[in-house]
Amino acid sequence: MVTSVGMSNVVWPLLLANWVFEGRWREKWQMARESRLLLAVVAFFLLHAVGLLWTEDMAAGLHVMERLLPWLVVPLVVLTTRPPEGRARTTILSLYIGTVFVVSVIGLVRWLTIPDLPYRDIVPFISHIRFALNICVVIFLLALPCAFYGAEGKCGRLHLYGVMRWVLVVWFFFFLFLLRSYTAFAVLLTASLVVALQLRRRWLWLAVWVAVVGGIASYVIVEYRAYHRLSPLATEPLKPFTANGHPYLHLQDGLVENGNYLHNYLCYDELRTAWLQRSQVPLTDLTASGYDLEATLIRYLNALSLPKDSLGVMALTDEQVLEVENGVANPVYAHGSLPRKMLYVIFFEYENYRCYRAVEGFSMLQRFELWTSATHIIGRHPWAGVGTGDLEAAMEEDFCATQSPLQGSRLMPHNEYLNLMAMLGIPAFVLLAVLFLCALPALRRQPLWMVAWAVAILVSCLTENTLDSLAGILFSTWFMAFRRS
Image 1 (cartoon, rainbow, N blue to C red):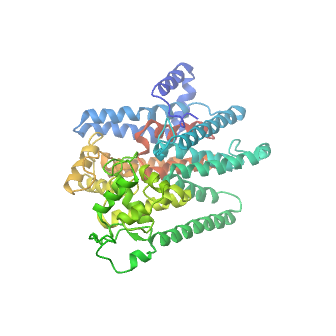
Image 2 (image 1 turned 60 degrees about the vertical axis):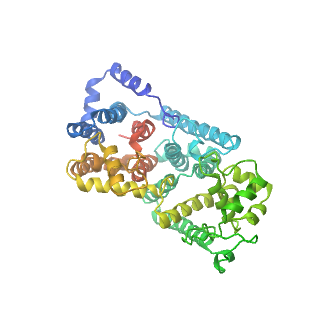
Image 3 (image 1 turned 120 degrees about the vertical axis):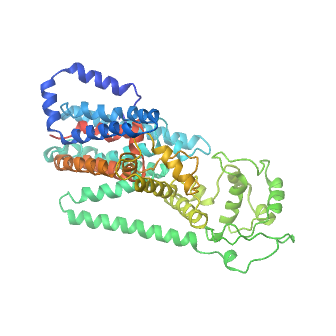
């Protein structure tokens, strides 16, 4: 519950204060000594503190330490406190599921009522990526019959609510498509594989998993081929002039969208003149999402297999003109299925990267550029890293040295593992990996939904700076309170 609405920085200090006044210090000390996970958490925090010794930007380093304080405090409190049991456990987890559901309903209302709402802003209070991770945990809580109780004998108590649970599971799957969270779907696939291998009749569940993955892969291949299947306009010999006798511009750069070469059959003069007859919005304006309206019009015409000239503009219906004005660059984005929309966005990003190495504004492909810069930094500073506060400056320095299109973006690696190695060095990463691996055997005693939660953290850290935000830290620590001793 707390992670889905983004706890404020006021809450975790209150949690610490309550823990201090609670007492029972001997019991807490004993629990702390026996917790390998707490040892790994504390080591993670202390290594960042040691990294301050060689950082050049002490202010930035102290900011990192301040941001990591909840990472130290929350596990310290929950791992030295008796986990909730019975009705208290069920009530807390039910409230958590209810909170995530309410926030998702609020997001749906916003999506339906706010025109041109970016998918990143559908959910208030929290990053859409962090909220998607919470949805993944909720799906496993609902889908695994013993999630709340963790005991075979009590599973039957949830049978009466089976229909409601699966309706909610379907709802949350739908909402993940609204959020366009590729990370969340990777988490679901990976976590479901790990969980399936621990269930009875594991070979049956493994076969189901393989069938699902095979179906998804087949769908992606079919859509990829449909996206790149060239239309007659793209395969016929290029015409030098428009129907009105004006010359076409054919860049012939090979960039394909919806089966057409985006930068062929361009006549900017006719495009701009004809647009004035169809719309009151100048092509020099920006769309609500911040993109160039002229580029949006060109992409829209291209997706319809229309030339980018006066004939193409005049062929648009009034509804299509309105869609262009609202920033719809591809009819699929407005009328296609949710999975197809997600795939067409990725395909377009890939085409831009393939032809122009363009990554700015493309959230998926820019990660490859970020990871490349992070590996450069690790190669130059393999033993001790650049220090706790210097990673952002080091990334910018590498962007400039490689003439990366991400210069001035102030972006971090978007990979928690590379982030750690670049900041503190490879030995620190290896030490922490060993400590956390030593804590993993305890997962065998935990409910399967907690196994899925642990997998969600590990997978999300591959593509996100999960621990760079309070919501991410709380997602990574709060569920420790429900461990099974």
